Length: 527
RNA sequence: GUCCCCGUAGCUUAAUGGAUAAAGUAGAGCUCUUCUAAGGCUUUGAUGCAGGUUCGAUUCCUGCCGGGGACACCA
Picture 1 (cartoon, rainbow, N blue to C red):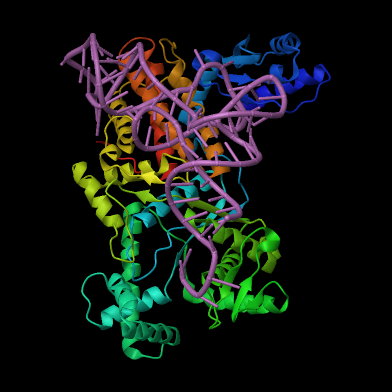
Picture 2 (picture 1 turned 90 degrees about the vertical axis):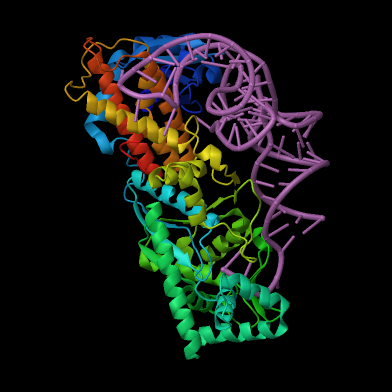
């Protein structure tokens, strides 16, 4: 519809021998300003001529055109348009909202990245929820998508935990190991020794502890993924990416991309306006940086992607800027194909946390705490948490207020789930009646009609910008509009309009379900 | 010190350079006793400061103030 209007406006401009770009067609915020609006007349003048052309060549879907404000041209859609859009929603059902924007494109999405021997905390939870949602949004654009988790399975953090376990630690092994590392010189040396042995796999006892701990960690991650309804096509490990990364670095050291400095191998970022970063330390071991380019190579060979999205916390922004440039230098075919999406921190009003001291809030703890507030309903609890994270722009910190997240009114996942569940029972109750989009359309229902047909546009926009919050915002507005409709219209009844109203309820039901599903929020049938 | 991100109603957040800056919550008032009221209606209330760009700036540019982060061998 938007395109049709754009084309109409272009034709109008052509007829006046004007340029056909530089204007926009959009939905005004206020219903009174029409269903679509364009600013051409402000840009180009010739108000009256443009309007005259548009009126003369009026589209069948448009009922009224008017000139308003400083020169906006507003379009009002006709009754037939709304009737047809309801028909379309009901016919397309679970397909409604999908688009083919990204058809034929291959996407890799990497997210969550918990490290073995360390806890899966609320930061991972946030990352997972965003990653899962972005994955689904891209899929809704018909892209072919593969997902990956990436685990730190070697390195000092592992050695610290293994040391603690060797010393009969109970409780949080990583935190204890870290404490010893910082406070006890002897322990520090032992830990460094263990780190080496893990790489070499030269000590049976250490291997046993390492292997069983690794297995246990991965098992725990899987059980959380299951609860969150997320799954990964691949799992990658730093133990693999490290070697590959090191090779690449040594190779391109000869070609002058990297240089040696103080015994380490570094990349000089100044030519690109970035800072210098170490890729191999002075022991010639790969750092996180080298591992990351190794990982890019693994991904490329696993699934030759057009775009690879990596989701991390925003403290890594500068790091990823460097890695993106280096990856492009080392593997030119990946230039411009890496996207780094970063989010802020998830904070609880109670205070900050640190995984180094063991003062962390695990994902599980948060889920259980929320669950207690919602009559032990897992789907509602997960929905509440996911909504709170997806409702705002990716990148800012989130202050997670448990009370607000489970609020039954207003801006919450529960509110959306409830509105959806209610339509299920409404439709159940009305089973004897047939939803009909052909009967009389009466009543003050334009608000909800107007929102319903816009769903595919919203999904499309969210897909272009990887922005789940466009969808949450839309769904909340839609649910509000549904409540309004519900409060004022008799849905089930024998009036000639009730068939049409029932069709609205059905369409709402479909759109809400599809929207929540694209976000990854559970849709309980009854509440 | 250099670079990056963020400053919007009391609070939590929106706003592809557009019309009167939009919601939720909290506050005030009214309404319904139910096709799931977890409603509905009305109302109070905001762009950190100072410039610039233009028909128009929360949005772009410059400076300042305030908060967070990154800046060589952690991830």
